[in-house]
Image (cartoon, rainbow, N blue to C red; front, top):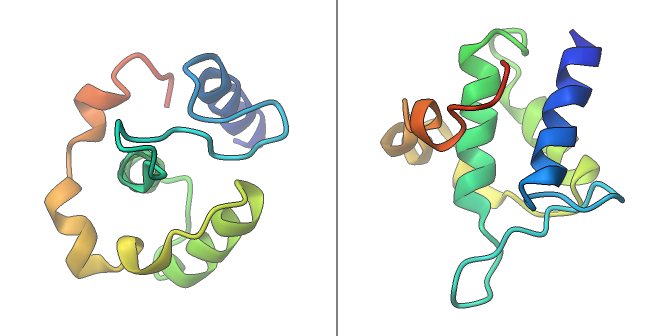
Length: 96
């Protein structure tokens, strides 16, 4: 599964969400970090069983560190509900 995840990261680099150093570089038109896209990506990973259930806090910490960005409260269940299912069009060409 980790090799598959690395392939997804390579695709994120190709699509300019991540840089080669694994820093989240995607930004909105207003130059603020595009955390929404990261949350949608994490929801795709969650829906595709990349995480054990009930590990949201650990997942957030892992990606905060791995991608050098603060997700903050954006990955809390009540805030991410509005993004449910969006990954199917935003990351439709990703091999989850």
